[in-house]
Amino acid sequence: METLVVYSRRGCHLCEVLIEELLPLVEGRLALEVRDIDSDPAWRATFSADVPVVEFADEIVCRHFLDRKAIAGILRG
Image 1 (tube, one colour):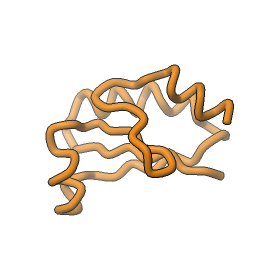
Image 2 (cartoon, rainbow, N blue to C red):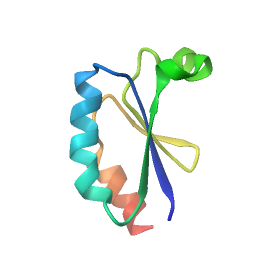
Image 3 (tube, helix red, strand yellow):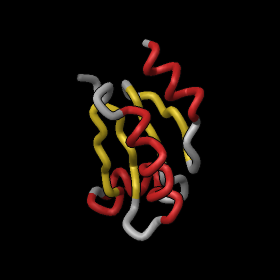
């Protein structure tokens, strides 16, 4: 199963909302990996001002808010 990555931060309301909206869309179709950017200096340097960030196959899919069209495109393959 392919993996969708969400770069997130604890206490980030936008992150919580995005993950909550994303889970039912990808459940059983894509694995979801949530990465806390504060756990890795490189992630923090790259994404600090942009969380949440959704990445698939090393490409940024969306930042700040869920792009449902982009997720639908990934799911269609």
